[in-house]
Length: 117
Image 1: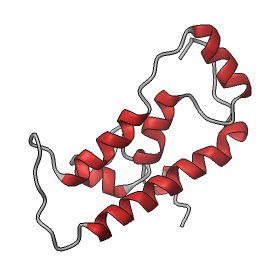
Image 2: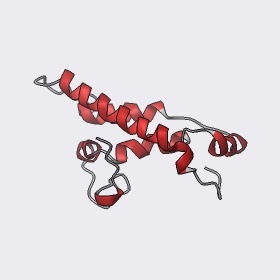
Image 3: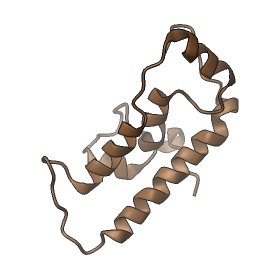
Image 4: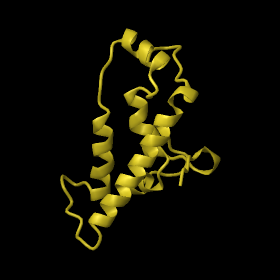
């Protein structure tokens, strides 16, 4: 993101909640659908790792600086680079999937962790 730009949390709050709720629900659905089935490691990745990597892949993008300024000023969605990390960093399942340790950038806990349900 361009230097000096800041995301307006009040503007993006609803979509941030939707991303977190949607990711958590999709993860729960994947776990229910695959319960009691072997984890077919693919390319050395577990089912959970592939799930979260596919979520991040959805948000791959590249925008010119002028478009980023417009998005930050008026779009109720955070820029994609932040959407790809915000929801997963609030899910303990993400940290477990990648063996993240407390204090690492992709681990939110305590009062920094957003829990909506």
